[in-house]
Amino acid sequence: MPMASFLYSSPATVLVAIGLATAMMGTFLSPFAEAARAFFVFGDSLVDNGNNNYLATTARADLPPYGIDYPTGRPTGRFSNGLNIPDFISQELGSESTLPYLSPELTGEKLLVGANFASAGIGILNDTGIQFINIIRMYRQLQYFEEYQHKVSALVGAERTQQLVNQALVLITVGGNDFVNNYFLVPYSARSRQFAIPDYVKYLISEYRKLLERLYELGARRVLVTGTGPMGCVPAELALRGRNGQCAPELQQAASLFNPQLVQMLKGLNQEHGSQVFIAANTDLMHSDFITDPQAYGFVTSKVACCGQGPYNGIGLCTAASNLCPNRDQYAFWDLFHPSQKANGIIVQSIMKGSTEYMDPMNLSTILALDSHLA
Ligand SMILES: *[C@@H]1O[C@H](CO)[C@@H](O)[C@H](O)[C@H]1NC(C)=O
Ligand SMILES: *[C@@H]1O[C@H](CO)[C@@H](O)[C@H](O)[C@H]1NC(C)=O
Image (cartoon, rainbow, N blue to C red):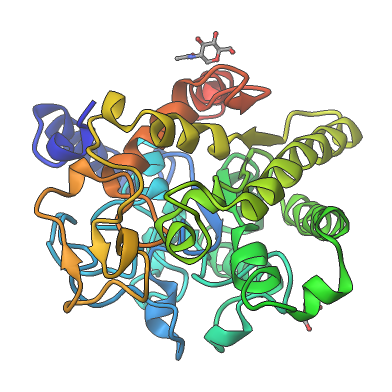
């Protein structure tokens, strides 16, 4: 279970490293033939691995103590004490972590690993996260994906590029900020005056559908789509709206409306395309497991963030001046909104092995087995 602690030192990892080196040597013989399946990531801070470091925005995680448990021990822009969800998925694919699209290191052969387009603070809607100023909104992430494909075409040709994109695994995590950093950000927000929650959810789902259709047009054929977690239970909301440590009901209600409609929308898209392109990951249930019974997962608490201040360490940002827990693996939440590295590892285990209640219509191990003939 405590995967994170041995991932970077086990003999298995060394074997994987040797395997990768062999694969890379293979590229001298037949260019890029041995590259592992590419991986593309879209969405918000739950999956951003450093794009915002390159932007003039307040939504950033590039200062200590972020990254304290990362292999380098230094902040990377991930909103985690160490690895995030995409990092654990990359490990399952047998790949190195994807680089942020804006990283100057993302050139040449590195492009074939894939890319991470995610940007902390963004939502499905363009007006979500406006307080963070300069972030990469969803339509822009998709434009970058197109630009990425032009770059790869220049490297390996158009046909190989299309193949790489069609065979890739894609992860998209977006929607939480449309509630916490838009509708519920301030009392009487513009969106809350425009829509009641059930209508707002319908609107979000219809806009999300357009984004996913665009992703399909751009060549994505295996897309993991996460729902929103239990937004009312994060330390920030416990501090702001929760009563006596109970999850905030308005946000819990929003999640309980949004997630099932997302699943239905994905089913509709799959029917339209006659193929299981979009896979729903029930992150609400995955989180709820350890929120309901933190001890079962080795956590001392799922209410108090490891890093922060105020009630539940849920007020303000996680900075060098904040309270910091000594053992991050004992906390489900690293900061006021984001799971700890340990929790991210547990979530990815559910994505890999979960029953259809967690992964609809199938888990990632099944996908990897089904698609193995592509490799
Ligand atoms: C977001 O902004 C872009 C660029 O202005 C625009 O093309 C897109 O339609 C907008 N999306 C929505 C949902 O309004
Ligand atoms: C994945 O999903 C399949 C089908 O639902 C299930 O039989 C299997 O137990 C799950 N786990 C693994 C590791 O495949």
